[in-house]
Length: 141
Image 1 (spheres, rainbow, N blue to C red):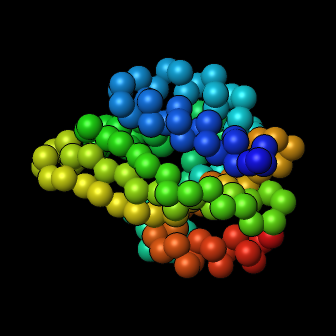
Image 2 (cartoon, rainbow, N blue to C red):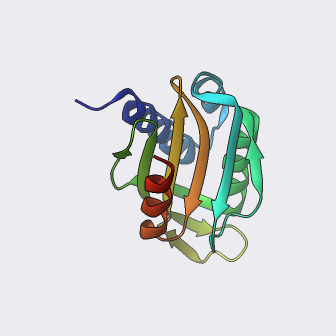
């Protein structure tokens, strides 16, 4: 049986995939308000395409909107949900679509590392390499 943290991650990815499919981020707002802690931080680690930080549920929603503005026909596929310690879930993903301005096909495979406290996500770190992500998750577990 999957842990509460894994179920939280699965629900988030299912909602995100649906938003990418439909182009409608409105349903994400309620989910993010429920699952994302107000102190939440999203940031890219190392040499990853994601620059900057996003804060709170609204910051995460802005991040998703920015992705959807840059990439059309976007899709996302989690490759697995791996628990590391009591509060960390590592999710290697593949996502892609078509760059809106160049129409070039895009496909990337970063790894997400989620930190969960008291049933809410407090941090999402995005890594380019899976090995980096697992090392960082184990260092904080």
